[in-house]
Length: 215
Image (tube, rainbow, N blue to C red):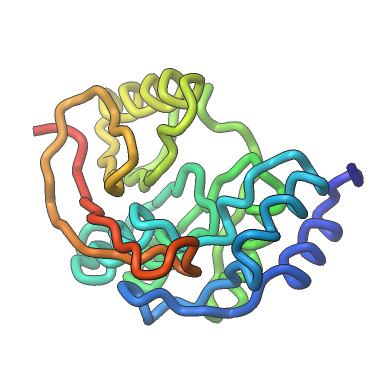
């Protein structure tokens, strides 16, 4: 595997992805996988990671759609997008008037994709590869979607969100049909139908829901 520098990560995104728009959030253009099956092996060979950034997943699409339709949820606020991937939620927050938005992902290729997606949409986005889950978030709003796919993440993200709520941070969570949710009380705000972009299975559409942590 190559040493993944920011320059290597950016080149990988530009070689393996092209601008696309999802059906649910056509306002935002993203660099997504040209070859949705082949990119998994290429990403593994590069850095050993799964290229989550290369797809607009249902949870992220739903959360972005909700923010665009309800800009008051982020307008004038400091927003943190955890496990940002393509950063579709973060970009929706920028469009909706957030004061500052940080797209955070420990995968350097995801960070490169987030930065390129911000450029593509002519938006100023802060991108961070720092592991923020051990910190106490000094932020107003946290956006999080489709990240409860590994036992370690369930524990660490759950603890992070509990600390955030105790500090009065508003947390919005987007899930999809096959996603686990935090083990904490939540209020459902919206429900959508969202096809994965690009497709891995023809005609497959998932139900995606947006929640606010707390009752």
